[in-house]
Image 1 (cartoon, rainbow, N blue to C red):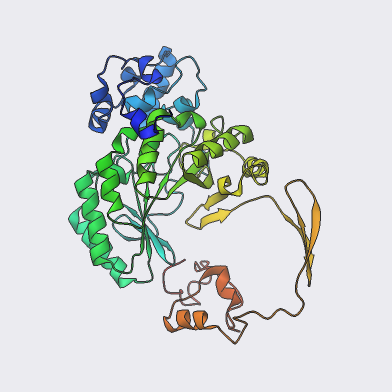
Image 2 (cartoon, one colour):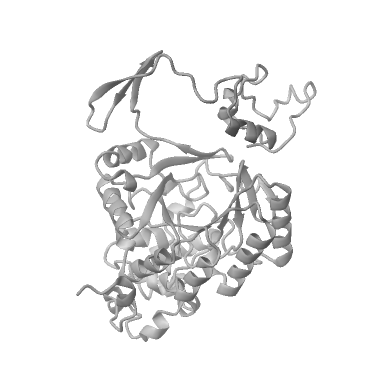
Length: 446
């Protein structure tokens, strides 16, 4: 009989990766305690030398990297490193390397301009109906490819009640916001009680918020944190969604699979955001295997991210062409359910821009020429007498409802409005020559 993954995780058997590590003699009860994992994180080059063979030069390189960026890795994730493989994908994501010492001319401290778009402590409002809210500045593991390396580890580590008050006040001033993404750091590092306090206040005091999302890498780097009590706590505040961050198939273990099973069994829809990283996962065959592993574990592949222009990440970045090549090997070759969207999170706060192979070959007034994943070219004949339910000048009831609410259609979609005065998108920042001539446009940039 097959034993469910949640029961396997509760067995007394030691995982093979733990048996091969320096923690082989740690009692399983302690190993499975996430507080123990946090207390025993590796944070120095000297501690690293206990688990990985390093030359004095490599140790000095790591020490120099730690002068620039913080470092921590829990025993669980460290135990997955192959000590004999300097190119182990777990090692490359967890251990500081020489590449972090090189800064490119195009590196940006805050590449996504999250602080520039800040509207309340830790809160970024970039898209019309949703906000990102950083509620904690600590992670179990400080990923070497992290966009927020500059922030993780800051004090105070978690959001204060005063900051929580300010954020909820902003949500109530902007009732168009229906979706709040709790991020960090890692929100699941908060205690069950503190996390529930935040969720309860959002549900009770911000009635316009319909959906709460959580971004967490703990199912990958420290799955011991995903406890039955945590899953039950989250379940009380549905609809709750959770996006995690598996980058390679090797990150799936009996413990990580048990963690995501607990969440899925609690009715929490799971998504995954993979970052495309040079020498870690820039291979279509590896990515295809990863997408299979995700869907088998009830995790919907959501995004593949092009690596951001954050400081010290140049050695991780691939070309955008590599991402398009990978997408070419996914679309049509595996289930559409397992195909994520490849995006570039635009520098300067431009938001996520989807990038994919070109499937539209050509088009004219009544016909679109398309190609499929095999390269087959087909023509799709469009209706010549088409009149939509909400044609220009005659909005349907749904459009009229939005117009009555006074909600503004921003960005490119706004150009479809039947408004002769809205025929172009004009950058809000004026050149020095124009500053004295025109009045600066008001309002938040979308």
